[in-house]
Image (cartoon, rainbow, N blue to C red; front, side, top):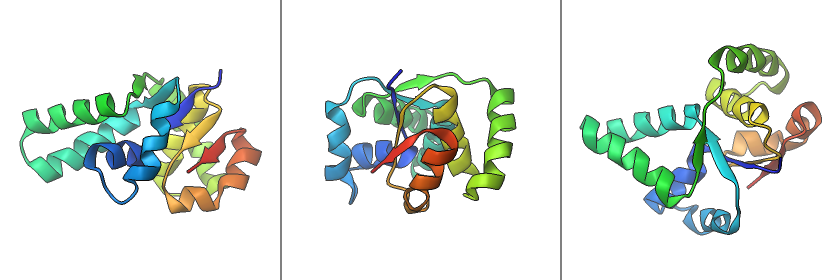
Length: 136
């Protein structure tokens, strides 16, 4: 499977038209864009802090996923935590970053698209240990 797993920051760049918006537009030409439930959690957290109202925050999350044309894939939480715990010692990244990379791995994705500088710095290690190719 050649899915493109999309990190939260790319989705937010599209929805919020931030500094990375032009770079984020490139994913519109890709097919099979997916993300995990961790992204929904991150989007809900972002929008609930920004908007302060639950219904509107949920709507903003849904909009962000729709505008980016990304499908949310369900991932077994037990497998996610177990594999992320292993990878955390190897990748030495922030917890949510490791959870996102692990989600991509468990979905069978070939590519992980992100604007996260910490992840990009470790793209060779990530490729070596997970076979995921990090794109920015």
